Image (cartoon, rainbow, N blue to C red; front, side):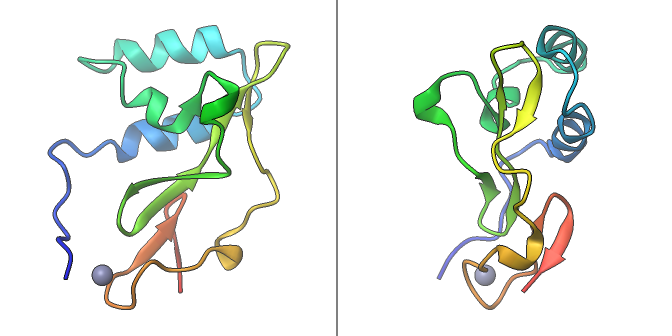
Length: 106
Ligand SMILES: [Zn+2]
């Protein structure tokens, strides 16, 4: 058994925003993103600033996944694994609709 409840605020628009900014300077993306939020922590759920935090994907809740992002040496926002597609993702359970970057996968 698991809960399908989301934790409060829906950060989908933030994650979509960050995805749309891949390849752009992180400083700009960060200030633009944090200006829209009352706290900047959710940005770092998706963007790894330290090598130890880097993951191919991040799980926002049990059935919602997004590409893991990081900042490269040039200061640009990048996907950890640009080749990762919804077809390669494995659902966590059978009872929920799973999405990767907003695309349903099964
Ligand atoms: Zn489920």
